Length: 251
Figure (cartoon, one colour):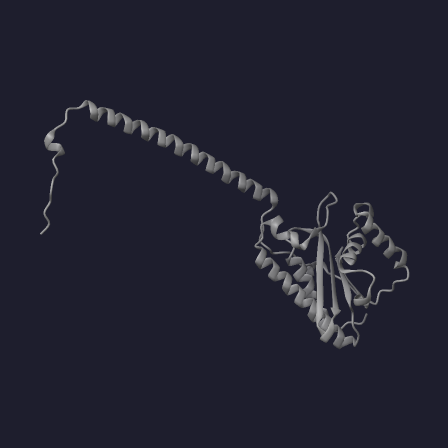
């Protein structure tokens, strides 16, 4: 697909935004976005993306919305970054219309092996046989390579129906580019790994336990001291003068 400089800048911005939303080393990213035109030209947007963590062993895909709880990231600030990414996708949709004088209803972005791929489709989502949750199921099987056996019977039927008709499905448009090594983007989100968080929690609990033990021991020592002073005071003779009140008159 012939590409214009402004759209190229948007693609680069999306790459940076996606990478910045991932607080660990990743192997690949898969994003889905769609827009449906409602009455009065109102638009309903949908977006989600997953990433595969980098590692020697095969790892499960991570949903973007799991990141705040998994990595102790401030949820409000993180979702603000996600909203910014959504806004960039909207800008891409508008720019695409203006430059190529055509539209797309849904798209998938794949970043893997230093390659950036965008697949556009122009499906009539309002009249589609697949609902939003159905498209999500298909996406997870097709792009995240989640085995069909992992889905429920109803979900497997949806996937199988899609696969039976996929050979007739034509990708509306696509954009592809290699990402040079020197231009690869890296995340900068501050986060704490799960194991680090667990260690901190354990250390805090241990410290609190030690404090409680020390506190109880100190209370016991003080009680013994007070008891001995009291017993000593009872054993000594009382000096009447010592118990007479002393009055100080202030001028």
